[in-house]
Amino acid sequence: IAGLVAFTALKLTRLIRDSNVKLQTLQLKRGGAVTRRGWIFVAGALALLLFTAHSGAVQLRIWRAHSILEHIAIGDDVWRPGYSWWAAATPAQREQVDKAIRHITWADRWGLAATPSSLQDLVWLELARDDAGAAEESILRLVEINPTAHSYRGLAGVMRKTQRYDDAESAYLQALA
Image 1: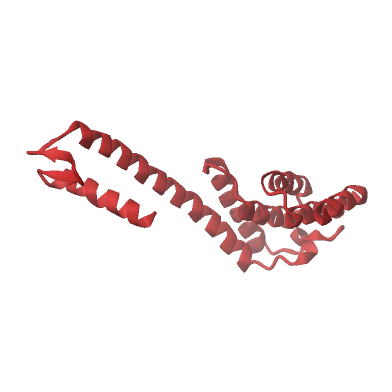
Image 2: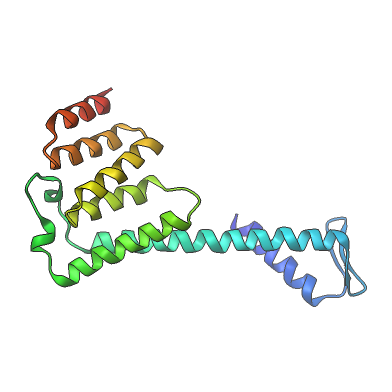
């Protein structure tokens, strides 16, 4: 994909700079004038470059959120009923959690589709922030797009966190199935 994008960008640059440009047997520009095929190529090239930039921006936001999550000390205790990581967190840690959540929600809003890894990170961050309702919404979205044993175990963990043990048992049974 990188090769295709680089080739397209170079050909587009040549189309702007040179007076004659060909793409295989297609004449894109002749004598300084862009041909009809050239304009079609320009439209396609701009769409590809715009899509690539968009995807890069979304992936950068997800990467930033994941990096923040890795650097703050959120342990497995966030899954334990009655435990509040947020209450024990420093103001700097709380700010980092909020920042990571903003990155993921931005990527979710502007991306084409949510990714399982970003939803998993979001569940951890929401549990750390003591927002079990938001964590449940996120884990249900994860189960919907990625119905694996791991997703159902996460759902069971959120149910257990909110002390809904019968629902947690059902999710664990789904995970086993």
